[in-house]
Image 1 (tube, one colour):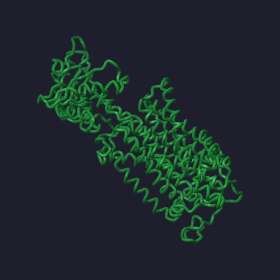
Image 2: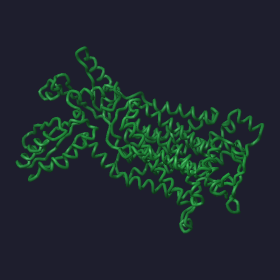
Image 3: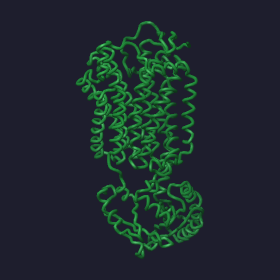
Image 4: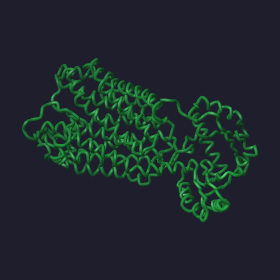
Length: 638
């Protein structure tokens, strides 16, 4: 421990003598420390405080003492999802099955991550990420299958037949959707960073196991419960009135008719909302959170503020100029550099660390006037590298590098930003090819790719509004600052996968009608009417699960939770329920067009098998009874 009252710690006392700090070095690596190791230290230090002395502790290790209780977010998310499921199904047993399936898959996935970590570097954050996405997709996948099973039961199928049909239709869609999520996550390998690779494999492993649980464990549970997945009222209605025939007159069915009648207005309205939300993304600034973003009640935040008060905001993130001095000319150039840096704009303090004789390495400590997260500090780093250092080193062989936590954060953000276009291109292309293979269409996957980009832009716009511009950040207990540098890569991979999920579930039902011989308008209307309710319920569940992670108390985790919850809400309620079906009505039969030469060369993959054989005749225009009790030809106007 270096005390401010020792000769080597003299610079650790502020000019007014009111703030001082001591530096503590632990004898074990950071990753081996636990909250139980840190809390006694905090307690001992706090004992010294009194009327004339205030003591706060900061630093990465001390933050372990401020961690909230484990699993609070997960418990809140699961309870909220269970409540939504109960209202959606009206049955306790039906609600229980998706929750049990998801928890089983996630638990097994966490064990898989622990085993996998012995073979590959896996960041600690991967467990939280795996649990986050595993709970969301696990409950959703089971929801789609249980819903299809319940539909089969109400239409008079025997339990075994209903389970077979559910797995052969929605189960296929689950496998396809889960595969797209895994592919999107594994797209992080394009970035070629070890910690992202480990995170991609870990999260994909959890998704894979929850997906397999949905098509193995869940059917077994359905076999045990049989018709008890229906509520008592539904079972009584089935016994009294017999199997349900035709499409129920639900709000979803009425909404599907409205979209069919006014596709231009609905498409324009949805597009305006998404574009407005996406505008703040143009101001996106990548960086890293520090303890200045912690809740104001934590000791780490109080220590951060005290250091800023006594030594300036930049004291929480000093820079290091590391120089290699090979000759007297280099030494003179370094002296010139130190003099220039002292007078440079944005510099609060410059201290050249004394070097031992015959050592070529020199270190200069530089404290900026601005905080580590501010744009002014990033601009200072750019000026040092691009102007000040090259000018001072002219005529010598002096090599100077700018280091420190803030510089590392900037470099990491720049490296990731430079690889984002390639990453987005690879993920979008793979998603396009998979959807083209599944739906034998060129326009549907192209529309899906565009919608995914729009959803991502809008969700990042929400993050910029809250975390970068500060709208509502106080309510979440997080301060303003840049968006985490690694967030775009991880969120993009997850959002592309989740967006593909809803696209697959929506369009597969439309494609099923198209394969059975219905025309485009009937296919789109039927698919929207029968899937929008379950997609919206699935979205509410995901929003509950992801939104619960805002309660984690960690800024990065709160960003993930809010970003994913917002993206799912926009994707399900605006894109898949409004914009996509409206555009498909406008495009007409062109939705299902694919060049013949390409159709012959592509392998056939059925995402959902139709319940009935395809009619031998051509497309069938159905006649449907609308809300105004007039007969309207499908695709026409009343």
